[in-house]
Image 1 (tube, rainbow, N blue to C red):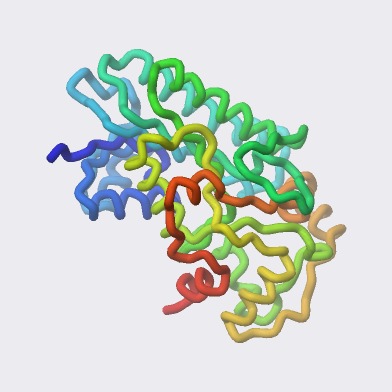
Image 2: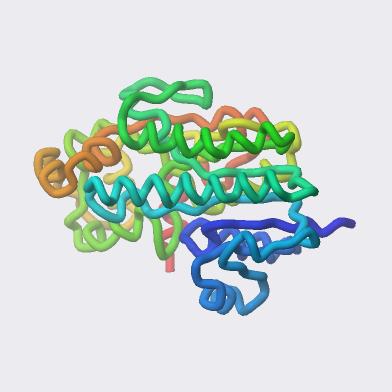
Length: 303
């Protein structure tokens, strides 16, 4: 039986690290493109190959699947002009380099999964959003649109291409919860603004499961929403997290304070939202391990 070989960017990040461990555990041969090859290799006990530049590859390096997860964290800093430029370059330039590699290599991969985010849809208020919905003029929407547009060049090469529009990823030791848990554990957590904005979340195990499903189902292509099938309002998310932690949730963070602290990022990512449904992956037969928020949060916060 052929042992599938994968090339992954962003393999040392919150999602990528978990993905690589799962893939290796399932017998895949994995190579990680990373700025810090030695450090990344040591994190995986040197069980995976690492490279710093794509030009280190030659004609003997053939991959069945390429997964592009590279990108600076979009909530790591207030969106200054400089930070916006970094956010774009960390996504788009890396994708361009991958496309150039795919154009040059003689044997193309069967599948290319390129990262994106539900920010693609912009602010959709209460509308139920599936993969057919268009975006708006917001920074995050245009960023994701341009990111996917670069990845789309792989389709011209005959490669089955998917754009994984990821929601709020819930997992241990990283992601959105890492920033939220300290306040909630102290009983100081609560809703943001009026709390009515939708939060489309996904447990990291399901996000990995979705990627594996995409790899194995040759009929899946185009945009794929990487979210659980039960999005919730911010107020419900906050109360559920507080309940799981057995803490009160008396506090709220006023919208004007968030806007003062974080500016445009607060308005787009914290005070607005999308009610996203993972229609394509459900139609493809994927069954969620954590379809309900309380179950997902319980698994993440348990010791």
